[in-house]
Length: 141
Image (cartoon, rainbow, N blue to C red; front, side):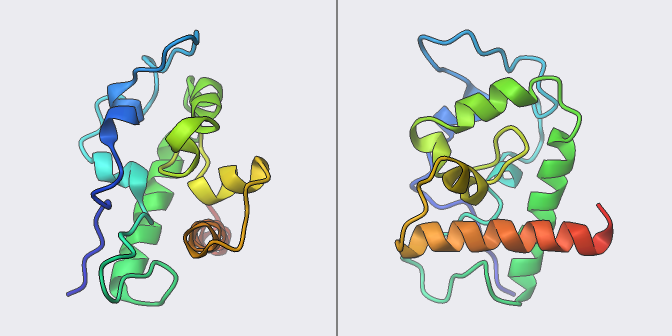
């Protein structure tokens, strides 16, 4: 069985679970994700491209699991009272490139911020976001 896990280079100290962001008045304390028992869910689709045969854009079982994890995380975000503040956090620093913030995936935030380039990692993030949204639409979510 193929497994995809959060890459080692994603530092959870900058995630919504260990919120430390100076010089802002963002409040994520009432976020629906607070106390989540699966922190990796918020990094669905993130793979370590240095590992052989890792891709979230194929049709493997591991890919389907990652898509489902992203959909689950996005469902938690849907009616979150901290969604706007969380999205604001997700537009800055390394949060722009990793994880789910404010109901958006990294590929969506990169597109919103005009950061889409020919870089293969960014293309993969945008492609994954499209795949997740397409799957949600097909499922009527």
